[in-house]
Image 1 (cartoon, each protein chain N blue to C red):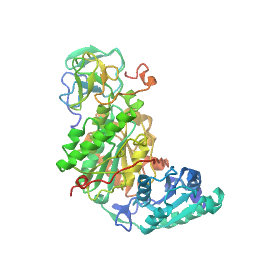
Image 2: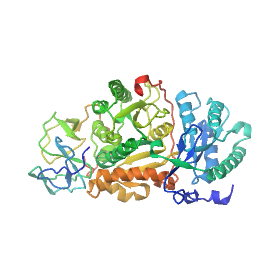
Image 3: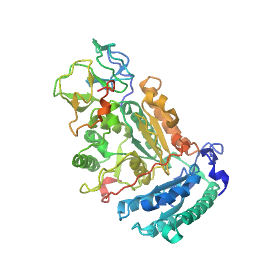
Image 4: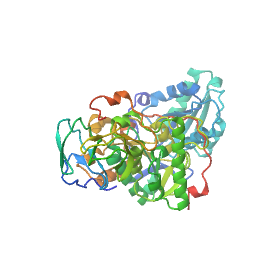
Length: 112
Length: 417
């Protein structure tokens, strides 16, 4: 695991790129809905709050495509995901076991 | 029992920091050294739990810890776990509390402890005349042992004599970025120094088993590591629920494989020397995977019903201390071995600083590097053997869980020489 010094080119400094091959970025602090972000050279507006530790698409991801984080597949996109869109349990499924989460974890702003 | 003990705080435990700058430990008859000199009060069935707890309460901040097995029916795994825990290098004396009609082989356990050179006493509640009499007898024994242990001499200890475990709990999207890889850096440093390091929870390695197997010191061991993860995957599939809690999703984790990649980071980058099962003590320094998932058919429910069951197993393998990485904010500690809480999430750290030993969230905020925090974790563990206390010790945490399981012995390829 490299240090977090990998700079994503033309990407907001509040977003982390963990591995060069990743198609998602990770929020290093909470970013509020309505904010404009630069994601790999594209300006996007965040539709919902992105809490610390949550993911966002680094580039357009097709339905059925693998989500890659830490340079490894961590699941499959269940729908097409536009660049700059939050990537979480609503648009990704595990290739192993389903993800169970409480309904109260679905509350607005929880990142889902 | 003196009032000083009854009202004592963590500060009443003699500190070794001022005495010496080197690591100090208590030498046991098997050659291992402990960084704590704990009195264990162990109940041998849930029916004896209350009496055990009542005996320990006046000493709760004075290194007297309650452990136990709640089951009434025999289970070789649980008996082995109890034997390993009661003869752990951090344990100096043992009090066993039996109701009297449970099936636990108390005299076999008592003999093991006595053979290890430790003072031991068994109180059978039915024979002793009930709760009050058992409590009085038990407290007298504990007070006597505590006083003797506080005077016991220590010897010099080297980092190569340490066994360190690691576990993550209350994980979120930060755990795999800051806390777990920092713990992994500390592991790399300890392995380099000749210590034994143990990581675990094969159910949280699902999806990275092939990457892990490539790090095994022999191809045979690599195949065994992969098989242990496949066993975990089958186990969870049968139960219908993976090792993934609701809070993991709220914290940004989306799938078990994402959680796995984060959890795997705490193993560091050293070659993997072997696979052990609960209660197996690593034969020499190196990095080991602890296979916590029972062998055979799915029989007893979830492999570990919570983090504390995993901590107990790491300690049963001889861990002097346990590195616990949390993102959401776990507060647990443990009986017997200090638990170092490494907080991966800077927001959680600011909210729960009283429970956290290490602020690994600095890595995410760009205020420290992985190497810096890794060294800090390493040095903190060394300080534990100079008398420093963890936050969970100061707060007198002593969570403990032990349930039914069954394991087959490990094969020769599990520990290639």
